[in-house]
Image 1 (cartoon, rainbow, N blue to C red):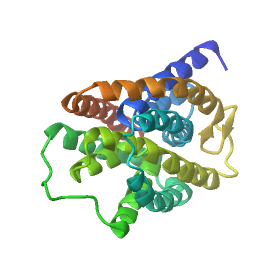
Image 2 (cartoon, helix red, strand yellow; image 1 turned 180 degrees about the horizontal axis):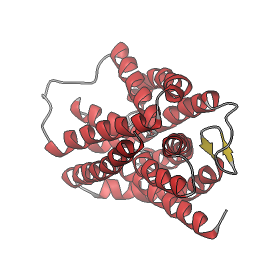
Image 3 (cartoon, rainbow, N blue to C red; image 1 turned 90 degrees about the vertical axis):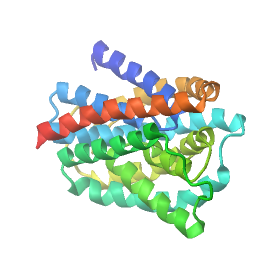
Image 4 (cartoon, one colour; image 1 turned 180 degrees about the vertical axis):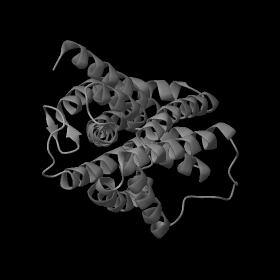
Amino acid sequence: MTASLIAELVALGLGAGFLAGLLGIGGGMLMVPILTFILGERGVEPGLAVKMAIATSMATIMFTSLSSVRAHHKRGAVRWDLVKGLAPGILIGGLLAGAGLFALVRGAWLALVFAVFVSFSGWQMLRNKRPAPSRQMPGATGQVGAGAGIGLLSGLVGAGGGFVSVPFMVWCNVPVHLAVATSAALGFPIAVANTLGYVIGGWGMEAALPGGFGYLYLPALALIAAASVTMAPLGARAAHAMNVAQLKKVFATLLFALAAYMLWQGLSAL
Protein backbone atom coordinates (compact mmCIF):
# COMPACT_ATOMS: atom_id res chain seq x y z
CA MET A 1 0.00 0.00 0.00
CA THR A 2 1.19 3.50 -0.79
CA ALA A 3 1.49 6.25 1.81
CA SER A 4 -1.21 8.25 0.03
CA LEU A 5 -3.68 5.34 0.16
CA ILE A 6 -3.01 4.81 3.86
CA ALA A 7 -3.55 8.52 4.54
CA GLU A 8 -6.82 8.55 2.55
CA LEU A 9 -8.20 5.51 4.40
CA VAL A 10 -7.23 6.83 7.85
CA ALA A 11 -8.83 10.22 7.09
CA LEU A 12 -11.96 8.45 5.88
CA GLY A 13 -12.07 6.39 9.07
CA LEU A 14 -11.80 9.49 11.26
CA GLY A 15 -14.63 11.21 9.41
CA ALA A 16 -16.81 8.11 9.34
CA GLY A 17 -16.31 7.47 13.05
CA PHE A 18 -17.31 11.01 13.96
CA LEU A 19 -20.46 10.79 11.82
CA ALA A 20 -21.31 7.40 13.28
CA GLY A 21 -21.47 8.91 16.74
CA LEU A 22 -23.09 12.17 15.61
CA LEU A 23 -25.85 10.77 13.41
CA GLY A 24 -26.12 7.08 14.26
CA ILE A 25 -25.53 6.10 10.63
CA GLY A 26 -22.50 3.87 11.08
CA GLY A 27 -20.48 6.08 8.76
CA GLY A 28 -21.57 4.06 5.72
CA MET A 29 -23.20 7.04 4.03
CA LEU A 30 -19.77 8.68 3.88
CA MET A 31 -17.65 5.58 3.32
CA VAL A 32 -19.45 4.07 0.33
CA PRO A 33 -19.10 7.03 -2.07
CA ILE A 34 -15.51 7.80 -1.05
CA LEU A 35 -14.38 4.16 -1.09
CA THR A 36 -16.01 3.76 -4.50
CA PHE A 37 -13.88 6.66 -5.73
CA ILE A 38 -10.67 5.34 -4.08
CA LEU A 39 -11.10 1.85 -5.53
CA GLY A 40 -12.02 3.18 -8.95
CA GLU A 41 -8.88 5.32 -9.01
CA ARG A 42 -6.86 2.13 -8.46
CA GLY A 43 -8.28 0.35 -11.46
CA VAL A 44 -11.23 -1.56 -10.02
CA GLU A 45 -14.11 -1.82 -12.52
CA PRO A 46 -16.87 0.67 -11.53
CA GLY A 47 -19.60 -1.87 -10.81
CA LEU A 48 -17.29 -4.02 -8.68
CA ALA A 49 -15.88 -0.91 -6.96
CA VAL A 50 -19.38 -0.04 -5.74
CA LYS A 51 -19.91 -3.57 -4.40
CA MET A 52 -16.52 -3.67 -2.67
CA ALA A 53 -17.13 -0.26 -1.13
CA ILE A 54 -20.54 -1.34 0.16
CA ALA A 55 -19.24 -4.60 1.67
CA THR A 56 -16.12 -3.06 3.22
CA SER A 57 -18.10 -0.14 4.61
CA MET A 58 -20.56 -2.49 6.25
CA ALA A 59 -17.80 -4.59 7.81
CA THR A 60 -16.23 -1.52 9.47
CA ILE A 61 -19.56 -0.76 11.14
CA MET A 62 -19.09 -3.80 13.38
CA PHE A 63 -16.33 -1.85 15.11
CA THR A 64 -17.65 1.70 14.80
CA SER A 65 -21.07 0.87 16.22
CA LEU A 66 -19.61 -0.64 19.39
CA SER A 67 -17.60 2.51 20.04
CA SER A 68 -20.43 4.96 19.38
CA VAL A 69 -23.14 3.01 21.22
CA ARG A 70 -20.97 2.85 24.33
CA ALA A 71 -20.87 6.65 24.41
CA HIS A 72 -24.64 6.94 23.83
CA HIS A 73 -25.40 4.28 26.47
CA LYS A 74 -23.48 6.23 29.11
CA ARG A 75 -25.99 9.03 28.57
CA GLY A 76 -28.95 6.66 28.87
CA ALA A 77 -30.07 7.45 25.32
CA VAL A 78 -30.32 3.95 23.82
CA ARG A 79 -33.83 2.41 23.70
CA TRP A 80 -32.74 -1.16 24.32
CA ASP A 81 -36.35 -2.35 24.15
CA LEU A 82 -36.44 -1.20 20.51
CA VAL A 83 -33.07 -2.79 19.79
CA LYS A 84 -34.42 -6.09 21.11
CA GLY A 85 -37.58 -5.80 19.03
CA LEU A 86 -35.92 -4.80 15.73
CA ALA A 87 -32.77 -6.97 15.86
CA PRO A 88 -34.32 -10.35 14.88
CA GLY A 89 -35.77 -8.91 11.68
CA ILE A 90 -32.52 -7.09 10.98
CA LEU A 91 -30.59 -10.37 11.09
CA ILE A 92 -33.01 -11.99 8.64
CA GLY A 93 -33.00 -9.05 6.23
CA GLY A 94 -29.24 -8.62 6.44
CA LEU A 95 -28.47 -12.24 5.61
CA LEU A 96 -30.95 -12.18 2.73
CA ALA A 97 -29.32 -9.07 1.28
CA GLY A 98 -25.68 -10.02 1.79
CA ALA A 99 -25.83 -13.68 0.79
CA GLY A 100 -28.43 -13.43 -1.96
CA LEU A 101 -29.52 -10.18 -3.57
CA PHE A 102 -26.17 -8.41 -3.32
CA ALA A 103 -24.37 -10.86 -5.61
CA LEU A 104 -27.21 -10.85 -8.14
CA VAL A 105 -27.75 -7.09 -8.55
CA ARG A 106 -25.40 -5.04 -10.76
CA GLY A 107 -23.21 -2.52 -8.99
CA ALA A 108 -24.70 0.33 -11.02
CA TRP A 109 -28.20 -0.50 -9.79
CA LEU A 110 -26.96 -0.73 -6.19
CA ALA A 111 -25.56 2.80 -6.55
CA LEU A 112 -28.94 4.03 -7.83
CA VAL A 113 -30.79 2.28 -4.99
CA PHE A 114 -28.40 3.97 -2.57
CA ALA A 115 -29.12 7.38 -4.09
CA VAL A 116 -32.92 6.98 -4.06
CA PHE A 117 -33.30 5.77 -0.50
CA VAL A 118 -30.77 8.21 0.91
CA SER A 119 -32.51 11.10 -0.85
CA PHE A 120 -35.87 10.02 0.53
CA SER A 121 -34.48 9.80 4.05
CA GLY A 122 -32.92 13.27 3.78
CA TRP A 123 -36.17 14.74 2.49
CA GLN A 124 -38.14 13.19 5.34
CA MET A 125 -35.77 14.75 7.85
CA LEU A 126 -35.61 18.16 6.18
CA ARG A 127 -39.37 18.65 5.74
CA ASN A 128 -39.67 18.30 9.53
CA LYS A 129 -43.30 17.22 9.37
CA ARG A 130 -44.56 16.43 12.81
CA PRO A 131 -45.81 12.86 13.19
CA ALA A 132 -49.32 12.22 14.42
CA PRO A 133 -49.19 12.48 18.23
CA SER A 134 -50.91 9.10 18.60
CA ARG A 135 -48.43 7.21 16.41
CA GLN A 136 -46.16 4.82 18.28
CA MET A 137 -43.67 2.10 17.40
CA PRO A 138 -45.43 -1.03 16.10
CA GLY A 139 -45.82 -4.16 18.20
CA ALA A 140 -43.51 -7.17 18.23
CA THR A 141 -44.50 -8.51 14.79
CA GLY A 142 -44.37 -5.06 13.22
CA GLN A 143 -40.91 -4.42 14.67
CA VAL A 144 -39.61 -7.71 13.23
CA GLY A 145 -40.98 -6.68 9.83
CA ALA A 146 -39.52 -3.19 10.09
CA GLY A 147 -36.19 -4.66 11.16
CA ALA A 148 -36.14 -6.99 8.14
CA GLY A 149 -36.66 -4.01 5.84
CA ILE A 150 -33.90 -2.03 7.58
CA GLY A 151 -31.48 -4.98 7.38
CA LEU A 152 -32.29 -5.64 3.72
CA LEU A 153 -31.87 -2.03 2.59
CA SER A 154 -28.74 -1.59 4.69
CA GLY A 155 -27.16 -4.63 3.08
CA LEU A 156 -27.86 -3.35 -0.41
CA VAL A 157 -26.29 0.07 0.20
CA GLY A 158 -23.64 -0.71 2.84
CA ALA A 159 -24.92 1.59 5.58
CA GLY A 160 -25.61 0.92 9.23
CA GLY A 161 -29.33 1.44 8.85
CA GLY A 162 -29.53 4.92 10.32
CA PHE A 163 -30.72 6.39 7.02
CA VAL A 164 -33.88 4.29 7.44
CA SER A 165 -34.15 3.56 11.15
CA VAL A 166 -33.69 7.14 12.40
CA PRO A 167 -36.47 8.64 10.20
CA PHE A 168 -38.67 5.61 10.96
CA MET A 169 -38.29 5.96 14.73
CA VAL A 170 -38.76 9.74 14.59
CA TRP A 171 -41.93 9.14 12.50
CA CYS A 172 -43.10 6.90 15.36
CA ASN A 173 -42.54 9.73 17.88
CA VAL A 174 -39.21 8.52 19.26
CA PRO A 175 -37.21 11.70 20.12
CA VAL A 176 -34.44 12.27 17.58
CA HIS A 177 -31.59 12.00 20.09
CA LEU A 178 -32.89 8.65 21.28
CA ALA A 179 -33.46 7.53 17.67
CA VAL A 180 -29.85 8.35 16.76
CA ALA A 181 -28.50 6.51 19.81
CA THR A 182 -30.73 3.48 19.21
CA SER A 183 -29.73 3.41 15.54
CA ALA A 184 -26.08 3.27 16.60
CA ALA A 185 -26.86 0.17 18.68
CA LEU A 186 -28.70 -1.42 15.75
CA GLY A 187 -25.60 -0.96 13.60
CA PHE A 188 -23.87 -3.98 15.14
CA PRO A 189 -26.43 -6.70 14.25
CA ILE A 190 -26.88 -5.07 10.85
CA ALA A 191 -23.14 -5.21 10.18
CA VAL A 192 -22.68 -8.77 11.46
CA ALA A 193 -25.54 -10.21 9.41
CA ASN A 194 -24.64 -8.43 6.19
CA THR A 195 -20.88 -9.01 6.44
CA LEU A 196 -21.51 -12.72 6.90
CA GLY A 197 -23.73 -12.59 3.84
CA TYR A 198 -21.07 -10.79 1.78
CA VAL A 199 -18.48 -13.42 2.72
CA ILE A 200 -20.84 -16.19 1.64
CA GLY A 201 -21.83 -14.38 -1.56
CA GLY A 202 -18.26 -13.53 -2.55
CA TRP A 203 -16.67 -16.85 -1.65
CA GLY A 204 -14.25 -17.96 -4.37
CA MET A 205 -14.09 -14.57 -6.11
CA GLU A 206 -10.74 -13.54 -7.56
CA ALA A 207 -9.27 -10.59 -5.63
CA ALA A 208 -9.57 -7.30 -7.53
CA LEU A 209 -6.69 -5.80 -5.52
CA PRO A 210 -3.97 -7.18 -3.22
CA GLY A 211 -5.66 -7.67 0.15
CA GLY A 212 -9.07 -8.28 -1.38
CA PHE A 213 -11.20 -11.12 -0.05
CA GLY A 214 -14.35 -11.59 -2.06
CA TYR A 215 -16.24 -8.31 -1.85
CA LEU A 216 -14.16 -7.14 1.14
CA TYR A 217 -11.03 -4.99 0.85
CA LEU A 218 -9.22 -5.98 4.03
CA PRO A 219 -6.57 -3.19 4.21
CA ALA A 220 -9.34 -0.58 4.07
CA LEU A 221 -11.34 -2.48 6.66
CA ALA A 222 -8.42 -2.54 9.11
CA LEU A 223 -7.37 1.09 8.71
CA ILE A 224 -10.87 2.60 8.66
CA ALA A 225 -12.01 0.55 11.65
CA ALA A 226 -8.95 1.51 13.71
CA ALA A 227 -9.39 5.21 12.95
CA SER A 228 -13.15 5.32 13.29
CA VAL A 229 -13.40 3.87 16.80
CA THR A 230 -11.31 6.76 18.13
CA MET A 231 -13.71 9.38 16.76
CA ALA A 232 -17.13 7.83 17.37
CA PRO A 233 -17.32 8.89 21.05
CA LEU A 234 -16.55 12.49 20.06
CA GLY A 235 -19.38 12.39 17.53
CA ALA A 236 -21.76 11.04 20.14
CA ARG A 237 -20.78 13.85 22.51
CA ALA A 238 -21.42 16.42 19.79
CA ALA A 239 -24.85 14.91 19.05
CA HIS A 240 -26.02 15.47 22.61
CA ALA A 241 -24.74 19.06 22.55
CA MET A 242 -26.78 20.00 19.44
CA ASN A 243 -30.46 20.88 19.35
CA VAL A 244 -32.95 18.77 17.41
CA ALA A 245 -33.32 21.21 14.49
CA GLN A 246 -29.56 21.42 13.96
CA LEU A 247 -29.18 17.66 14.05
CA LYS A 248 -31.91 17.12 11.45
CA LYS A 249 -30.38 19.71 9.11
CA VAL A 250 -26.92 18.15 9.39
CA PHE A 251 -28.37 14.70 8.71
CA ALA A 252 -30.40 15.84 5.68
CA THR A 253 -27.61 17.92 4.11
CA LEU A 254 -25.15 15.04 4.34
CA LEU A 255 -27.60 12.58 2.81
CA PHE A 256 -28.45 14.81 -0.17
CA ALA A 257 -24.79 15.42 -1.02
CA LEU A 258 -23.85 11.76 -0.94
CA ALA A 259 -26.97 10.69 -2.80
CA ALA A 260 -26.04 13.03 -5.66
CA TYR A 261 -22.58 11.51 -5.96
CA MET A 262 -23.87 7.93 -5.99
CA LEU A 263 -26.55 8.85 -8.53
CA TRP A 264 -23.80 10.08 -10.83
CA GLN A 265 -21.77 6.90 -10.17
CA GLY A 266 -24.74 4.67 -10.93
CA LEU A 267 -25.65 6.44 -14.15
CA SER A 268 -22.03 6.41 -15.29
CA ALA A 269 -21.76 2.64 -14.77
CA LEU A 270 -24.95 1.71 -16.68
